[in-house]
Length: 255
Image (cartoon, rainbow, N blue to C red; front, side, top):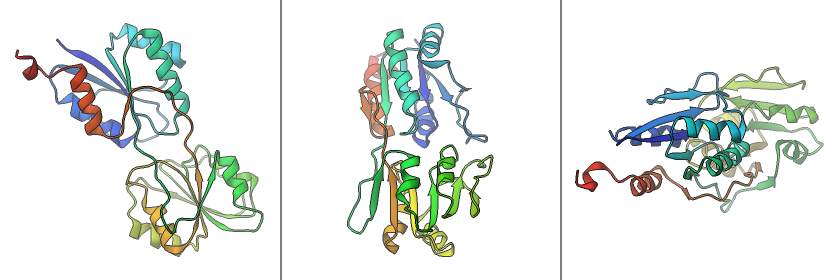
């Protein structure tokens, strides 16, 4: 018997989990991507791109495709998708698990200013002109048009279009991981005195946080949004173990 699994992806862990589960002959894995990244990394499993039409649309898909398990492995800041996933699973009567990497925690030497949104982050930079490194992705960069007095270094996977309506901005296109040594060089080169970041967690983009700590630079950290209360795992290994518990591998069933 083949069990159908839908993974809502967009993270490195989602891709790793999909590949791991797809190695089992008794699992049929589809990875769903929201389509917000123009050139996503190759996923290695069948991919569905684009939205479902809210919770109701996703519930219909789960029913029509006879999905037996929904895994939410979206980005920690994809709050609406996570909420829709939990509601769709409830409507369709399908089990749901969430793969959520732990957030970063401040350590000795960190200078974090915690905020709840990009707009609040822009205000937190203050009125005096600063050189700010925006590492929050392209979709929320426009919030910083409200603070045009600062100089901005903006890094994103895809181009920020349209460009920000500010007089001084440099745009970098890059995809992680970003080692600490490279982040230190970047901050030094551009004379950065403030880093704006989301608390994404994981090691791939932690380099800028460590680099800021080394230089005593303030980090304006956007807190994670609340997420639905569903069974979760922090790592790919833990999630794979949960899937094994639900769908025991053929060898363990004595077939």
